[in-house]
Amino acid sequence: MNAARWEHFEHKADIGIRGYGNTLAEAFEQAAIAMTTVVTDLSLIHAVTPIHIRCADRDHDTLFYDWINALIYEMATRKMLFSQFNVEIDQERLSATATGEAIDIEQHQPSVEIKGATFTELGVYQEDGLWVAQCVIDV
Image 1 (spheres, rainbow, N blue to C red):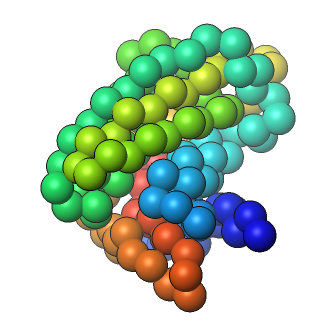
Image 2 (image 1 turned 90 degrees about the horizontal axis):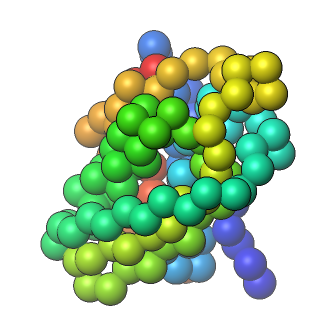
């Protein structure tokens, strides 16, 4: 059974993102989707340009924090949005490909600009056999 899914959770001024998966990598991918949907409808983003991202940390929480901030950095500096994520995690090393396209204001109609991941409610853990990766993002 594929349990991969994502959701948002409420936070005072910002928004929480949470990804679930059968694997740690899948939870990270789902959280990235949750983050993107804060900005726009995922179906509006064409997956045409792959960007490679690498992070490393021994702690899963910090690795997730680094992953989300790396995505936000790539979105901001390349002026892109991503709709597909392929994450591989080997020990403390994350290697990923985020695929998307340049932001088109008319097409994507972005609702907010994400400033960064925060340590608020940051957590990577297993629950009922699923991996969960979550944090609050600053918008």
